[in-house]
Amino acid sequence: MSRLLSVGSGPYAPPAPARELTAVSADGARLHVEIHGPDGAPAVVLAHGWTCSTAFWAAQIRDLATDHRVIAYDQRGHGRSPASPACTTDALADDLEAVLEATLAPGEQAVIAGHSMGGMTVMAASGRTAFREHAAAVLLCSTGSSQLVAASTVVPLRPGRLRTWLTRRILGSRAPLGPVTPLARRILKYGTMGPGSAPDMVEACARIVHACPRKVRYAWSHVLDLLELDHGVRELDVPTAVVAGTADRLTPPVHARALAAALPHCAGLTELPGIGHMTPIEAPELVTGKIRALVRAHIQAHIQAHVQVVSEESA
Image 1 (cartoon, rainbow, N blue to C red):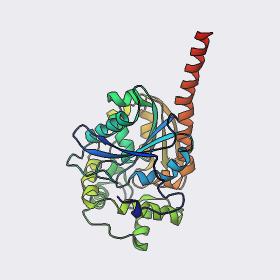
Image 2: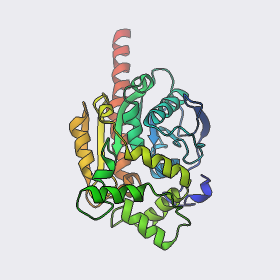
Image 3: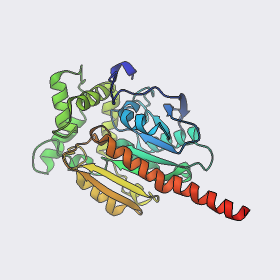
Image 4: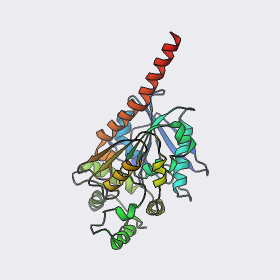
C-alpha cells in the first residue's frame, strides 16, 4: 500500500519511521517492518488486522514513539508486504516470530498488541519459542478465537443458519471495493465502526481498508471463517488485557468475554460503550493507555526490580 492512499495529515496520518527493514518468514515470505522511536526504549510490537496495514496504528505510533520503540509490520499480502500463497494461522504465527527475531535482541521483551486478525496472530503464536522469549504482556483488541462468522451481527437477523450464510457471503465477497465514496464510507462505518465515529476516523479506516488488494481480502476471509484458535488462548501464558467495543458487529463482545474467561492470566476486560470494531482508531487514547500500562507493569517494573537487585548485590 502506498502511503498516498492513507490520510495525509492529522492524527491518523502514518508517521515516518525512524527505520525500515524486511523480516523473512519461515516460508520465505517477506514482511515490511517499521521501527519508530528511540533505540533502547521499552519495546512495543503492533500487529494489525484483516484488510489493514501499519497505517492503522498511526495514532498509537505517534503517541508511543515519544518514549517507546514501536515496531509495526504489515501482515503478508497487506500494506507493503507482498502476497503469499500461504494464508493460514500457522503462517501468521511464523510471521510474528520472524518480526520478533528481526527486531528484538535475544531475551529482550516487548508488549505485543494485536487488533482483530492481529490478535488472532498472537493467539496462533502463543506456544512458539520466539513468542515465549519476547512477549512480556499482550493487548488483544476487538478479536476472537473461533466462531467468528456465526457470532457476527453484520447482518441484522436472528442467529442461525441464514444469518451465518449471508454473513459468509458478505465477508467472503470477491467484489472490488472501488474508490472511497460517500456510500462506501457509510457502508464501512455500519459494518466496522460505532455510530458516533467521527468523519476523520471513518475516512482513515476507509482509505486503509480500500487499499487492501481484493485477492488478499478474499483469501484471508476464508481463514477467518474457519478459525479455531481456542487452544492458542489457553497457551497465552503472559498477562493479557482485552479490549472490545459494545457496538462491534464483526467481533461482538461475546468473543472478548470468552477470551477473558479462558486466558490463564487475564489482565482485565474493558468494554467500550458505543465503540465498534476499529478500537485503535475509534478510541486511540484508551488503547494507547492500555499499552502504556502494560509496559509500566511488565517491562519497566521488571527492569527497575532487576536494577535494584544488581545494586544490592554490588553493595
